[in-house]
Image (tube, rainbow, N blue to C red; front, top):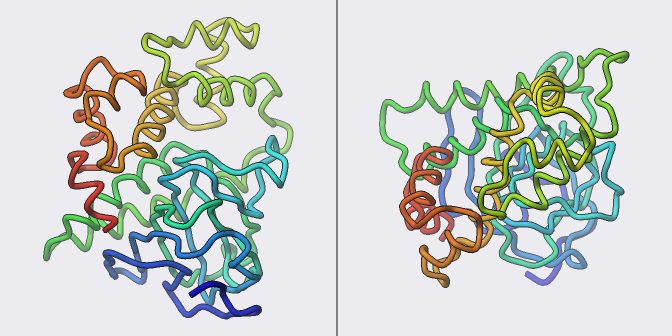
Amino acid sequence: MTSSPRGTRLPSGDFIGSRSLSVETGGFKIGLWRAALPPEGVHEHVHDDAHFVLTLDSGYHSQAHDREKPRDVAFRAGTLIWNPPGVEHRDSFERPGGRFLSVSFMPTGELTGADPARLTHHRAERAARLLIGRTAAFLAGDEIAVESLALDMASAVFHDRDARPGDAPPAWLFRAREAIEDLSANPGLQVRDIAALVGVHPVSLARRYRRHFGHSPAAAIRHARISRAISALTGAVPLADLAAATGYADQSHLTREVRAFYGLPPRRLTAAFG
C-alpha cells in the first residue's frame, strides 16, 4: 500500500498499519501496531468508533488539541491521543514503522461529543503503558484486568474536559513539562533543576504539577525518560549503551523501569510489535 484512499471509513478497531497483537474484551479492542505509510500517503479518514493512541515513537502528527503545541509540531514518544468517533483526520507518523497502541470502543453519552485531545493525566498514561504488557502477555482470565485499564483511560477524557475553567495551568507549568521532556536523558536530573529553570520553588512546582497533570514532576521525569528509551529500543543498540544514553544508571536500572512501566522486559516489549 502506497497511500490510503481518500475518505476511507475504517471499521471498529482498524487502523492504517500492520497489527502484531490484539485483545478484545468488555467492549474494548486493543491492538499493537506499526504505521504502514508516510504522511503523504495518509489521506483524510474516519474511524467508526472512538479510540486512544499511545505513541512509542516520536514524530506523530495529530489534530488533537494541545494548548501549548503548534499544530505543525509533531508529538514525542509517549504521547496519548484521544479521538472521538466520526472525526475526519489524517494523523500519522513522520516515517513508516512508527509503533503505537490502539484502544477502540464505541462510547455513549457525553464522550461522543468530546473533542480530539492530547491527554496528560497520569492515570491514563499509566494505564495505556500497562495495556501494552497485558496485550503482549495476555492469558485467559486477564479480561477484567484489561477492561479495568481501558476504563481508566476513558475516565481521563472526562477529567481533562471537566478541568475548572478558572484553574488553568500557568504558562510556567507548561515550560516545566517541556523542560522535563527535553532534559530527561540527563543523569541525575532533579525536580529542583526544573524548578530553577522556570523560576519557581520546587514545592510550588510539585504542587501545581500534581494538581494539573495528576502526578509529581519526579514521576514526569521517569515517564519522559522511559519514553525516550523505548523510542530507541529497536534491538539494534545494546541495552547497556541505551541505558547510558537515556539517563539510566546501568542496564539493570533500565530493565527494571521498562518492567515497571510496561509489565515486560525490554526484549519482549520490542518483540511485541513484530
